[in-house]
Image 1: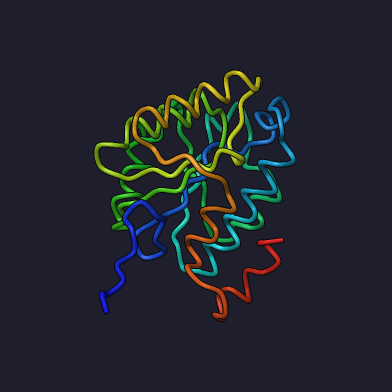
Image 2 (image 1 turned 30 degrees about the horizontal axis):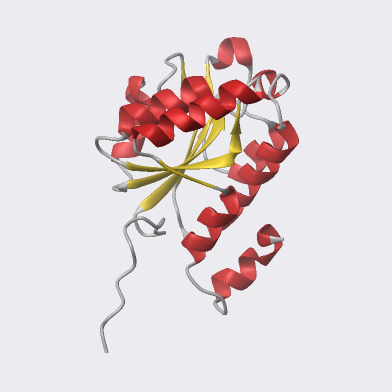
Length: 187
């Protein structure tokens, strides 16, 4: 019988990190589908914590745009968001240093705005990392800009999927202690 080797096109909990880009209320208040993207980000955080996947979060110009959304920040617990003024997270020295220390090759991405910070970050990082964009956990002020940002990231080589797709890829199988712990996030 042939041995099983998991596809590199799937998210692996051993190789991945979760990146939450700019989930700040001043931005979220003007986004489309705000409740949906917050709910999906919370699911991603929960399952990543269960699976031991490291999490990074950023804040765009926090002095002007304020802190991370309270529900997201509470779920993050001890994760301190990285403040930045660059649109691409890779423009921030602090971000690159934090990411370098994780030793991952895959980045699951959620955040705002899809056509600005999310797409620029993904496109900047694709030479070094495999990006997985949770399309139902990213947004922009308009649906058109959101779709354009997702399309641009996908056209550049990112894997576009849904929160649920990536959650099940991280979990890999049912019947485990981690799967049972994640059930509330899967509903």
